[in-house]
Length: 215
Image 1 (tube, rainbow, N blue to C red):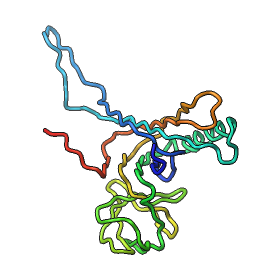
Image 2: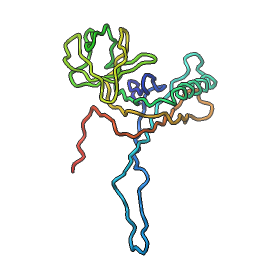
Image 3: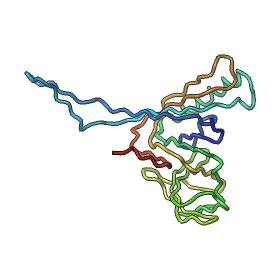
Image 4: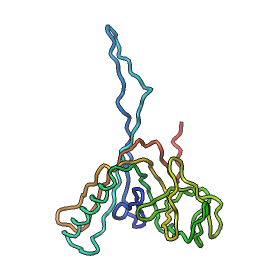
């Protein structure tokens, strides 16, 4: 576990420190046709209808107001209620690998963010958020204290304002829908793991770290 790791669903931080995520891709129904008096079926590959099941695991910290079993159960219900309230949205799931690479907006005048001694470079993708609002943006024209932001494709910028939080993004999956959260802690504990499930097409995704898989 890395205490600096975080996951967000749109503007909402998935409770606890990030442990891992598991993107499980699958194709849709494979079209097969059985002809009359045919030795072989006709199998159609042209409609894969790919989709993605994304499982995110976090380690939920104790309830700061009640470091007891009942406090932990209260946290579990609170996070479930918060996500159920977002069940009709298709927001991005965002992976923040290191939340020390974070900053606050000092001011914003489109397309320029002013943030003294910010840690971002040209080409970085950042999550800009506050309660109830979020943006995924690409950084350009970075100087020591300013940078320009452009909305990531398929998204738009919210009304960015002073004191909005900014995080360096390691990965994202756009258009994900909440599917449920399951606590995996042992009976009687006062903190534990939470397994969050999301579902989407998986078409629009990003990884900051490049990977070559050959040909």
